[in-house]
Amino acid sequence: MKCSTATLPLLLALHLPLAVAQNACSSDGAPAPQALYERFLSADCAECWRNPTFAPGASAAVLDWIAPGRAGDEAPLSAAARTDALTRLDAMGRPLPTTTDVHVAPVAQRLPGRLRVSFGPAVNDYVGTSASYLGALPAGANEGWTLWLALVEQIPAGVEGTPVRRNLVRNLFQRTWSMHDQLSKKELFNLPRTTRWIERPAMYLAPGTNPERLALIGWMENSKGQVVATARAECAAAKP
Image (cartoon, rainbow, N blue to C red; front, side):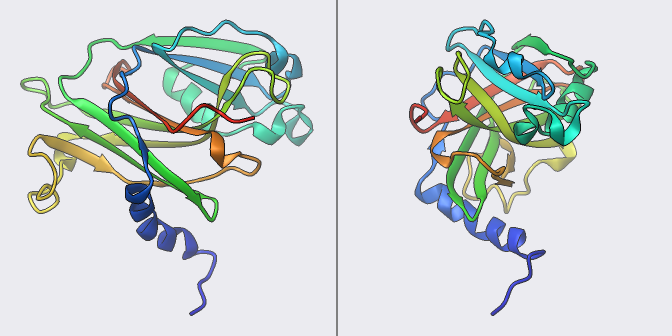
């Protein structure tokens, strides 16, 4: 049977959850990050990549975004630039950086439940991921929450010209969860009764990404854009 390129992602999405279940790296047992530490680098600024920018300890989840530059494909860091960085900047109401812009978002008031994330091995340039919120919600809650999943490549300090360890964002998934989107009774049959939402997106692996360095960082924001839940899934230390 022949498959068109248009149907390939759909077919992969059907099989990738099985791959996640068989060989998944999850946030189970790992402490939830206490803050997001986001570094936005302009693709025009090669020096920004070589700059030993301060980073917090392990209690924070670090995200390195490379935003498209004015030079387009001629920009020094254009190969790693992602329009996802523009999506994130727009959501926070921050301008496009010309050098490096750092944003720190501590967890405002953590939700009473637990955000869980996991991912499996790369299959034909796609990675099966999973995110679920388990537990109760604040009494009387009727607002929407935004789920963010960032598939990152962990680049060790001293590798590829960076003097500091980086979590380079390679793909981004965003979804708004509302009370109307909760799982049905049928969907909840094999899940904890307190599960509210679950997503299983297949995320494309950007060209040039080393699949042995992958990690998944997830967080939820309330309607005010405040971080209220975090999770981080890592398989092992980043490999050179």
